Image 1 (spheres, rainbow, N blue to C red):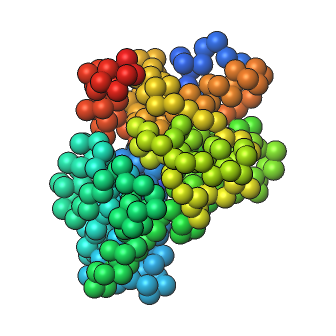
Image 2 (cartoon, rainbow, N blue to C red):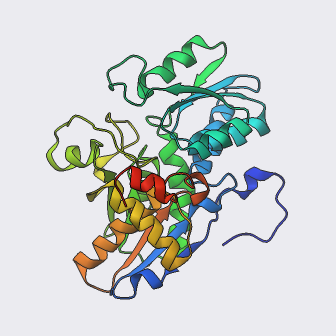
Length: 326
């Protein structure tokens, strides 16, 4: 899928990521499962797509100009993707992150000279200084500040509607029964779902949400439950957010940190894929789906990032034992 050409800069390396068939981990199943390796984007995650698209669209529409400061909250991957885009295009970047972010992500962000605003991850959602509330205020208080708002700005979804969705459809040759993705900001699952369902309304889309997040309960009961702490990075939320369009999701599975992390390690052992925790979550959900259906269906899923951002956590046995996972 990668084009054989000279790229003019690192942003040209975003998109056209490989989609691979997973053979070893699915040996006992009737279904075929395919994973799109989004960690092969330029800065190593699926968020490269939205950072490039959202910044370039804001530029085109005159909302930002070089020298301005872009502000957003992130579990790390969007911040890194924005750091890449901002460095090339001449923007400053301020990023709100939780203080329990993996040490690798923090080191990467510091290496890219991102201004980090560390937030106490135990603050309740209603706190004015919580992860979701402080970023827009910082943008307002920053001269020439622009709040990207990846959680509510539907340009996030649009990036995947225009790129990730068409790529999956082409790579699968239009033969796809299920699409499985994590529900984080909602951009990936909803953007891809919109494209795929326009091509074939019979495609079912399954979301994955960690225990402690609110999306699973809201989808199934329309009730807002009180969020609780969890370890998975990049999935779930404590608020309903604008990029999650539940009408584009057919079902949501709920996953524990333990199941996600052990499956992440199993991917390394059986498929030689060093992926991040959200990839373990989508793999677990894909296997659960395949076992429940027990038919020769074709399932596509997303592996959003790689192990390089979790060596001190998911790939560290001492950390897993400390968290009660091993």
